[in-house]
Amino acid sequence: MPNISSQQDSDTLKRVEEQINILSGILDQGRHHLRFPGRLEQRYLKFRNQRFLEIDQKIIIGGLLFYLGFSWSDFYLGGDNARLIFISRLLIAVVMFALLWSVPRTRFATHMMTVAAAGIFIVGLSVLFFIQLIPDALQYAYHLGLVPIQVFTLVALRLSYRLMLIVSIALISCYVMMLLMFEAPALSPELSAIVNAFMPLFVLFWLLLICMGGYLSYAIESSARSDYMKNRLLALEAERLQYLTRRLHLLSTTDSLTGIANRRYLEECLDKEWRRCLRTQRPLALIMVDIDNFKDYNDYYGHQQGDHCLQSIARNMASFCQRPGDLCARYGGEEFIIILPDTTQGEAAYMAEKIRESIVALAIPHEASPPAVATISAGVVSMVPTAENSSDDLLRIADRMLYQAKEKGRNCVVAA
Ligand SMILES: Nc1nc2c(ncn2[C@@H]2O[C@H](COP(=O)(O)OP(=O)(O)OP(=O)(O)O)[C@@H](O)[C@H]2O)c(=O)[nH]1
Image (cartoon, rainbow, N blue to C red):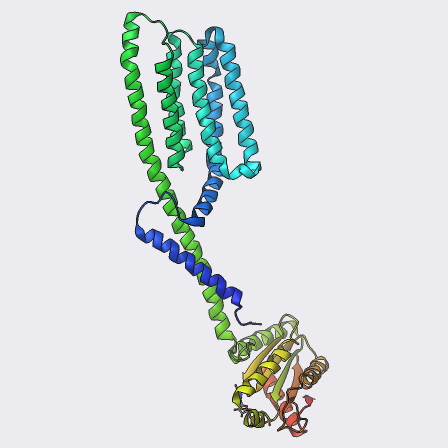
């Protein structure tokens, strides 16, 4: 049975519309935002972290396996320190795997991307450490190992422009400091000349890679944020449409004065229940109710008070419709109809009597009527639908029964 839309519904609609306005405003500005206002940023970070956990964590695992896979080079190039380098590499990988497994299961899960960024930085530092452990020219092979780490930083942290830049700049700064602070291995003059020419170029290429990566991850992050906003806007629009559709349905099926179903909805339901009972061969009952001497009530108390009276009686009658399929509707001015599927004549008459008694018990003063309180008359009918008759027959018979109730002196129930 339709019910007048609650305050809660319109509050939610208002909230949804406010959010739509905020998001549309941000999108209309047309700038690429790398920070949303207020709670939207928190929501986005949560969403981004979720995406990171779903997709990029696998990339990190792949990167760590790759890092571990290079253990062979430790034994091949590491000389006396091969074992130390290998154990350090293994330890770092194990700690990283443990963090990747455990952090998402703690309350720090929302900081997973920061943890991954710190992990990548530590892996980079470990390579600088390995370089120091190899005293001869073979250490330059490890310098090259920093390139895939930088590329990996770009890929794994592409969704966060800032984190990507922080890790990259921190790594290259440490590398340059290492070059300046630690002595290079002793090389032949020819090799030394090559290395001296190569190292500044290497740092320059690395910087170039960071700049290009920075631009790329800026573009990726701003487009990811913009997609997020558009999707959020779409979801909000869908939610809004849902509320509006519901409200429209309520308006088209509810009687505005009493809040119970209107005649249009009643006819729809009556037709549906009639066909259902025809299929199941179960009885369908209908109670037609009319408030007694309501014209006199209006004349005596005024139309506005008449409206209040209608509302109280409607509310009271609707409270009797408890089962699914039961429906109480305003049929016309002061006329109501209750439909009760799977209900026999006796059961419907009993219920009509209960309703009549409850209206009397409401004790709505009605000085212009003999019992001095508002009363109702009701006509009751129940039938098992057949192909030969229709729901109009139910209405017609109930109307006749109601007429008889009025004839009998009102404030009573007559069943067919
Ligand atoms: N206040 C109010 N009155 C209404 C509304 N709709 C219909 N009415 C009034 O209900 C009254 C119905 O009067 P009648 O049809 O003569 O019936 P009655 O006075 O109830 O007499 P009986 O039905 O024979 O007992 C009319 O005066 C209508 O104006 C409404 O929405 N609000």
